[in-house]
Image 1: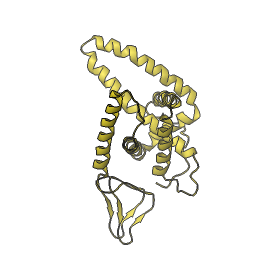
Image 2 (image 1 turned 180 degrees about the horizontal axis):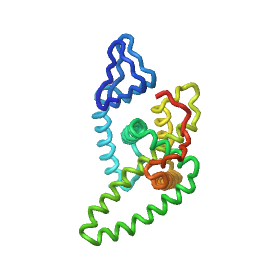
Image 3 (image 1 turned 180 degrees about the vertical axis):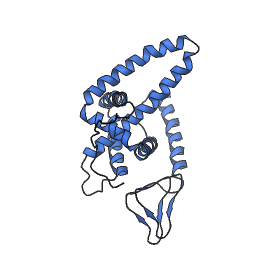
Image 4 (image 1 turned 30 degrees about the horizontal axis):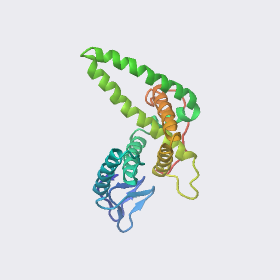
Length: 236
């Protein structure tokens, strides 16, 4: 993976998995081989270009707010969010595959139970935070608690996105890990921007993701407990 640059494969280079470039290209020379998927998000300078568009979109949104008008999320901001969450989810799939499989199994097998557990965890987090803020020594603990939530919730959402991508028909497109995650994440983000339905779906997704994290102890499935395969065998 390359961030803000090209992935350059010299002659006779062999990549066993995927070749992914964010803000660059996948350049293959001679008889180089990529056994997985070649994924390129934009050419040179795409990161700075997207950031500039995001700033412009933010300024435009501020102007609209001052005029009393509300608008949807711009395409540039949507792409920035997609890339950020895709990178986060893909890195989790690469460096913590067993934990992600455990989370996907919890999401798929008992989504209602995970949702209830996640909702109760969020309710419990509020009074615990208030109690910690009362004492000076508890303030950093409260900050650590919410930083942890800010990490584990997107982790659970990545598992949900991967589960969605696995269940969606892709036709003749090869089901690599990158493709499955990208399709599921795109579907989840598109639904999130549907008026009324989107916030409700995302609230449920957050509860389910947090509940799955709590139930599996961050995907650390105990020994002897089988973990259901969340996807068909992928060519990674």
